[in-house]
Length: 215
Image (cartoon, rainbow, N blue to C red):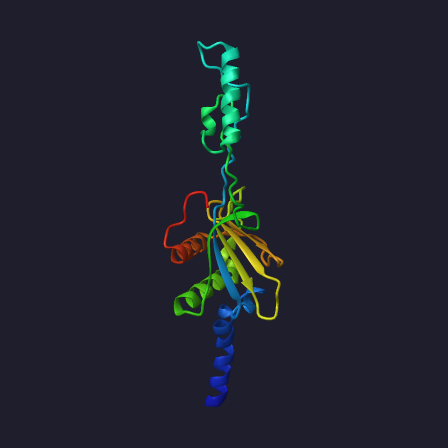
């Protein structure tokens, strides 16, 4: 075997080691040019506080009910004649109207606290590669996960010439991820200890803060 033959044989042996490690699992092997939007999510939501019910008119101790009813009628008439003159809580039995809050934006039915699109800057390109390396590697995932799901991070990836997004939800507290818009390529979706650490660092780089409890 001459030198040239030995050289090509060595390259052939090394090729799987060099190129196999860099390969990502589909669909993450098609995401180099994808548009990526990252979203900081609330995860676990507190149950809404029940609204107070309006009961019978409140009576003022020591004043006959008839006089109180006459006073209430007079105040209500004045309120109708001059709206806004009398604060609602001043009239016994009348409750203040509850302001209607605008609907909170959501991603996969989870409240969005903050979001941004990754750019072509060096810092964002590095973040993009880190995200794709984690989710494109089967070794990132194990069966170690919690029996809950409160995502603190969402990621939406849109490939060129393919309008269907590949969406990811990441729950740090429950140690697992879920996907939408594609078939999950691995047998498990729980994070290894290394994956959890990497994703926590990505969260820190994205939002400038540590992962909060319950996210």
